[in-house]
Image (cartoon, rainbow, N blue to C red; front, side, top):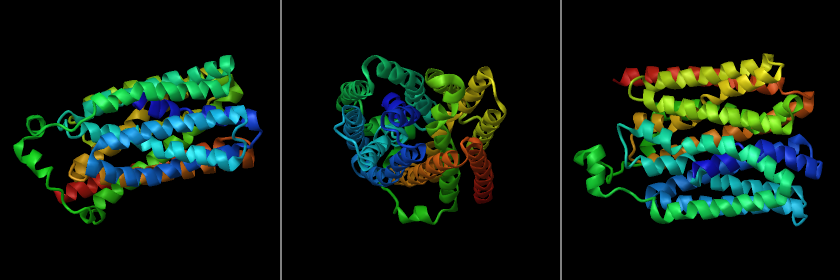
Length: 390
């Protein structure tokens, strides 16, 4: 699930921007707007699928994610064949893929794991989301290779078919809630009983900690999304399309290391300090991009930024569970995810607009840097608030 969610719906956008630009001649701002619509659709889907997860479990949300993402792949393929030609049709395809993303990514995966794990949740998420790094490492160069060999249309159609064949068995045979005895082994009998008595959701909106988590997470992930959506266009001038795709793979492989390190450190170091460190590491990587000129340094900068890509995705579920509990996790993370994806949409669109305006990504990188620094301040406020309540 994570392999396809991140490979197609996260790391793939830079490839789509470059490929569709060559195919259609549309400006970067238009294609960035399509990616922004992808993330805006995430906002709505996160809110809706969060409620679905709380009420029906993760399986239904995952099934929708599979079908919608595959249809999005087929829709992109249709632009190569000439079956789809209009910009509004591209926006519809990106919107469909955007609604699919929460059903395959962190919302669905974390909601599937949280009922099974408590003390080992960080490690479980690290393992469960490891497919994200594999998707980022494999999918961009694979897409590039398939496009060169068979064309953009056949490449995307084939990826859509493989997505369905690989993930439907997971829904059918793997995803299920734990039985009472299984839940008690990890959470204890008392906690397992409480999980069946969910408090009213309106309590969430009066909790300052929730808003601090949501704001810090949205700023940090928004900066990360803005960078990753433009990483290939940013690097292709110096590295070429293939070299830029390999730089994405470097970032994804680096993310695999960081994700497992975070999973191992959870429970040993406070989450707020881990979050602060992750935000500042990625900020330093963005600074490195601003000053790097040689190909080697650009690959190093990709590795620095990539080291915490997975961590920034893992942290919101962990912060929500630690600070607010798991009783209404689907709704709590759905709202947080909506804020994150909304900021990702804005950052992606603004970055494309700034590039078209000045012809370079310097101001876009400075914007992302500022978002990470603001997120760092908010997570410190969250830590202070938690200490005050103890």
